[in-house]
Structure formats: C-alpha cells, structure tokens
Length: 343
Image (cartoon, rainbow, N blue to C red; front, top):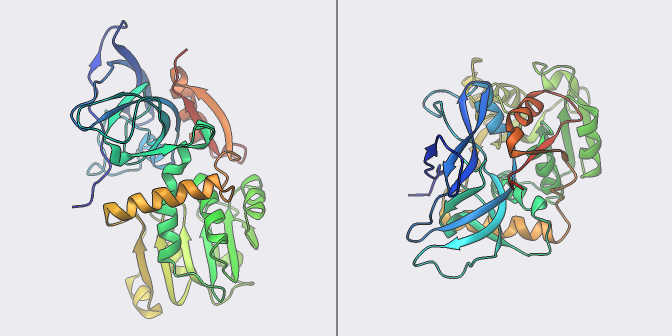
C-alpha cells in the first residue's frame, strides 16, 4: 500500500517551559491559534527535525476557508507540509541520515511547529549551500513532475495551465521543459502572469473573475481547445472548466481542483470528447522518491526557481496574520512563508 500524508502526533499542553514548543492549531474554520506542545522524541526508525521554513500551501488555505469536506478534514487540526529544516535528533535503527542534515519534508502534515518527527521516507537531504528557504517548495515537485509526465507532452501539443499560484508557477517552469507547441496559462493577476511569461509561457491570459469560462477568454486564439489541460486551481469546480477547455482526445491532469466540486459535471462531454482524466500523486513509493530526487536536481541546476515567488515572510507567532494575508486574493501575495525558528 502506498504511503499517505500523515500528521505526526503532538501532545498539546497548557504551559510554557522547558521541553515545550510553539505550534499552530486550526481551531475552527477561519481560526488558527498558537499553542504549546511537548517537543516530540523520535521513535524507533524516526528522526526529529528542527523546522525552519514552512510555506502556506493552497490546500492549507482550503482548510482555513472550510472548503474541504468532513471526510477529508475535521477541526481542530494542524496544517503545514511545505517544510525545510535541520535534523536535530535521530532515533534507533536509522541509518544514512544524521544530525545536522538539512532536509526538505514530504508527506508530513502538521509542521507549523518548532519540531516534528518523521521517518526517513519523508526526508530529502539538501546540500548545505542551498538556502533552506529555497528547499521547502521542493515538496511540490514530485507531484508536478509526475503531472508533466502523465500529460504525455510533445512539441506538437498545446498545453493549458489554469491558475498561476505557487504550484502553478512551478508547474509552468517544469512544463516548459517538456517543449509543448504552445504553453498557455491563465490567472486573475498581472503580477503572476508576468512571472509565468518569464518562466516560459508562450501565451498568458488575464481572467476577469474566478467564475469566468476559460474558453470565453482564450477560444478566439485556440478554438479547438487544448491537448493537455492541467488545472492548478484550488476549487473542484475548476474541473468543469477544464473539461470545456480540453480538445477532442485531450488529456486532463488533475494537479489542482482536488477540492469539492459543487457544479454539475457533464460526463457525456467527457465521453464525447474521448478525454483522459488523471490524478497526479505517484502511486508507488519508489516513484515518490524518484520524483523527489528529480525535483531537487531541477532546483540545484537552476532550472526551477522556488524563491522568486516568495512575497511575504511571517514568524510562527503571527501565523494567524499570515493565513489572513494568504487568504486575501491579491496579485502581490503569492507565497507566504512561516519562519518557525523561534528566537
């Protein structure tokens, strides 16, 4: 069975003192608070990571907004999974990784904290000359690289990416290396579209509002739709738009749009167009590791920029303000990073 995202246990306490740490708890929809918890000890086969940077992902924002269904999440909960830090303790029966290693984490949720424990499977050791702030977003690259491969992209295909948030901008950089005929991206904000052009988009279109139909905007230039559509939006309703934008015999790779869809989905249109719809999380653990390696290599080789889209840095003590900031839909707010190192 493939490993899934996990939330490491963390024992909350009502006092501040030695052996305790600061952590963030999502108490209810729209409410996140700073609490105290015991500093965890690594169990057999685990390491402890002193967390430095955690990015606020779109999935975190969905939970903050209450846009995820109860079977996915319940409150209170802990968030944060785009993580970079330093191993500060190694439990029994762990080989290879060691104290002092700089690492990025994947498949660990609940990392808005000073310390978390996990198994080596969730770690990717980073070169120490790579700034840690650039390491946290390596977490998104396995799913993005897998999405690009599933797209079966070639120089005769037109590709559409809807949404140029953090993951969308990384997706644009990766898809550009697959050499599509045209790489078309859409977003609500000029600032993000400017970065997309820098990252290789051949066509950028500003969407007038979040409920607009993409083909109403791009259809004059691409009347037949797109061979590959990769939605990088949060809300599940974006899949309806993706189906409309896909060309005959096209392929939709669901990197985004994994939230609940409250719009009717016309499955006859899927059938009539002969569409393939694919999800993007790797189905085997070995693939997860391979894509983790490849993602790091793209960053180290200067082919993917994970730092340029960071627009705000907020300390863990002010995590509520950071979420309010990230929740505001604005062009000058792209990636909000939480500094979890408590001075």
